[in-house]
Length: 538
Image: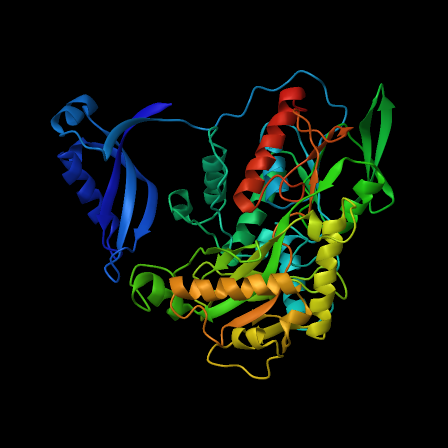
């Protein structure tokens, strides 16, 4: 830990240089450049309250020569303070010996970060991924979007990097971070090749194009520390023994034929591993159905969103504008934007034959013609068919089957005006689709339940009062957005283990995260839980 001077509310033009920011720091502290030892940006955000006169707002940490003298000379200011930096600390390792290396099931953000931290601290983990490596997977997904067959084990949902690999690569999270895991995740990503500005941006993102290389670099780091990663290796079963009143993990079964002994396995399977959830239910692993949200993707011209948010269709120094919207419908449903992708694409994110789901994706530069976002409506187990712990999956599948039929295997698309009229769209208006995969005109009221459509109609109308033109008649609606979060939560105790001791539920699929950063943070948390109990293997 160390003390630094923190300066907040430094405002500059969007086109400023780093030299101008440093000059501002010197001016605020009333010091010469020779007295400045170092400075770094802690946070940056956009102040768009006086459109179109936009400002970038910074908080910076500074180290100076003769710190006490500098602080005495400055008049008291709410924007200048002395703060103590705290850095993340991995816990001290335990004493219990591992007979076999720990296994991490899944290589999404949760699995990758769990594997990385275990590997770095001498645990030599084995990571088992049902899909392909990120390069092979990227080719497979591109072929699917071009009309070739769906690869059931390697697609937008499954493969190295997880579902986030084909997304916008957003890194913001609402998880409270008293132990520094959030900052550590960003530092790891930046060291692996992500843009350095993710360390301070208010809404950081990597972009699908850069995230793919970052994922590969982290895998190589894991291997460099002594870990191993195997692809096309799906865990299809567990072997346990009874110990007193509990079951204890003994081995995992891979691809229905290979038995790998282990005492610690991390279940970082992602929210779409439906066959694995079914296997867990059969194995009597304690789980419960949980609420999530479903809906559609909506597309607008990015220039329209920029105009509404910035007061201009383009502002030099600023990337494409985003938005965050919420509405409480008259039928009691909450409607909100989710995973908004500025300058992005709507993508076919299917992972099962005869079922269709969509997601949003942006490249780092966010230069696509359209903005898109999920508009989703809350659903609870009361909406699901039956009362099984997997009833949420059954609900998702109903929607995805309806979407597949409505679009004849392609993404069903409807104009907002036609949704209100309850009629199938026949032609486009002024908004042209930015889509990865095929699309077909449809009526989304054949896909989504009536109360969901009612809430969406009301929500879009209300959002038009907040963003001019959001409710334009030719706004594009594409569905179905059904994979917003896990439909189940896998129970875990205070030591992070499931009802099978030694099996550690982790990340978004287990119901403990929502997005890349929170999943990665949970992966670190599980690595800590294993390390506190066991001694390293090397």
